[in-house]
Length: 204
Image 1: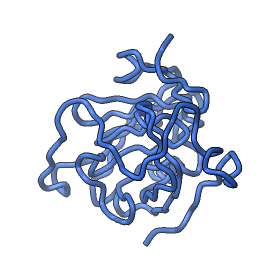
Image 2 (image 1 turned 180 degrees about the vertical axis):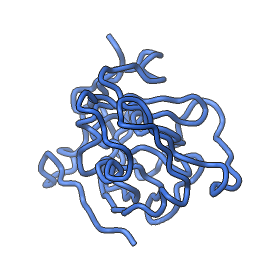
Image 3 (image 1 turned 30 degrees about the vertical axis):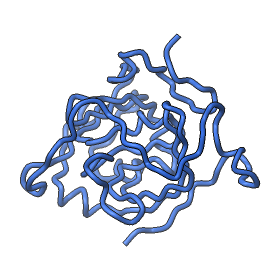
């Protein structure tokens, strides 16, 4: 059962235009964008886990069953893709990042960044402060249903304040660091900060 949580938009909701960053258009569709093939999973209860390492008190892992037993919330938020589409009032379910921290070894005070490690070799770097916001999730539900494989099943990151590539699909581990380290798309020329309201699409 999900506890309801709705993101409070930074800008007025009186007009849709106030919720759409510069250079974006609104779509009702949910486009599928990724590089490479979609991972295929068989028995998640025996083959899948979520791992944690870096600047924390000890390395740790959660099995599929252990992760799915964590408290969950539902978030309604807008998402914005670097390819210029925005989708408003999307509904997600999963575990808040800050809730997850209660169930793994303590972070060291030096931690400032988190690297999401995903199947297919993808990584995404996100400042810790972004992940501590209420709407940042480890998400496995979309619009009341399990994520589809194309959208990140069985688990993806959700960081609505950033362009959507930071919401990395097929999440398998979190690395905690005191310094920033470029992720997969950042190494290929995408902007490291990815703020849609500043149109931080590509590196200078």
